[in-house]
Image (cartoon, rainbow, N blue to C red):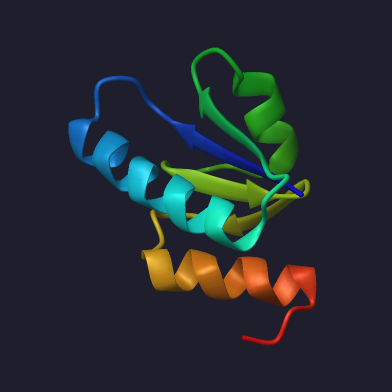
Length: 86
């Protein structure tokens, strides 16, 4: 499974939240491909995925969150995609 977070550089609140989300995500999916992408460096790719607001989270190529989710929201989305029942 692949999780991509599109963000802008310099957002300290985003960085702190991303650390918590990364920890939660790896607790659900051990072989996770986690990528934090600077939207300024990946603008064409972000547009292709439909990213219009930041931060946004894409899971396996699908735009899932158009704002920073809570850890519980990300956890639920990952569990749903893995088919696990927790």
